Image 1 (cartoon, helix red, strand yellow):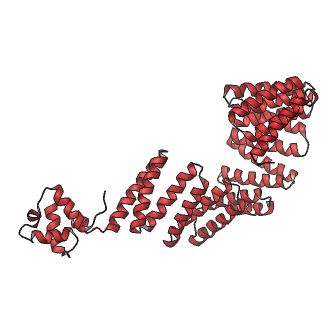
Image 2 (image 1 turned 120 degrees about the vertical axis):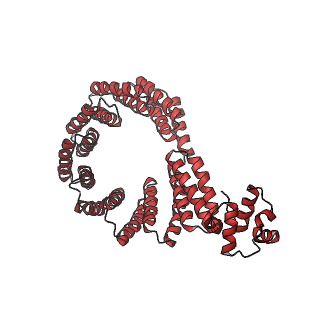
Image 3 (image 1 turned 60 degrees about the vertical axis):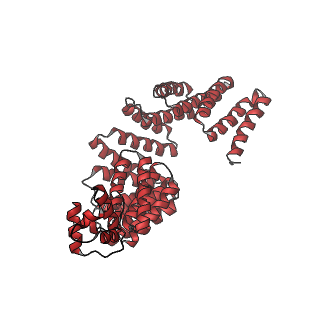
Length: 430
């Protein structure tokens, strides 16, 4: 669809019908007058428009559509196409369509659609992990929505920018965006409490990350004041946030009480994954207060309920069990669980987990003064991490390998220290 003036539309339709200027003019006007109209050089009366519309088999409304009206229709269509393409994950085509629409919106000053295009472009960049580009597009969209006073879209822009800042661990910036979002919600008096709860949970999370547990609890309490009792999942989220806050504040007994409440809800809901998450957090509480027996107890519970799923919760429980047995100098038990974990990692082709377990084996043999075997396992770790191209971990492994060679070969010790330090320097860590 091309954006045409009145004259351009008449000329295009005439040519499509293979009509001459004289044929279109008929007895109504002259061919010269039609030529003037087609070049937008002549004013056209409504009666004449009705005559031309009838001869060209179109509506008068079509002929009267301005370029601005056409550009709005065209960009509406491009936006709809883009939304479908985004849902189908065809991001490149969607981006092409949006860029076309943005050019049209910019040329014909279609402000609302210009904002929508930039909003969708921001969504695409977010899916591609291009956070700076995404924020830039959200800000362009925000400018348009503010000019049009579109409060709902203004809120979404602030919210999404805040989400990106969380990903980038820029928590102060995220809080500022969420505060703007909250002020918009208050202004338009949104009645959907779920929107507020979603926003407050994000603000509570940011304050946890900034070690401001009091502020975090304030937002959790705001959520708690809302009507959530009929929604076990929401109630559970609030209780978990509160429990984690109390844990971070060192209030272990109070934290445990909230975890118990969460368990009561989960027992009713029979949600294995949520239950596993709670048990892992409880085991972390006990780890912080030095109760390794309880760490084992709750980690074992996670393993028991998730061993058939072989997911990340099962693996995390195995890691905790192995670490605890190593801390207790129970190396045979640690090896037993290493074997289970390694088999699962190989089966599921998870190279990172495979590396973690091989490193546990190396740590165990190092603790048992079996340096040669520890070195063998560490070399296997290095091969995997080299394959995964994680230079930070690789540097650390070379340093550890150098330490293992300290009583075996000073030459090897120096070689691996130099490799590790060289990588750290390339990463500008030292």
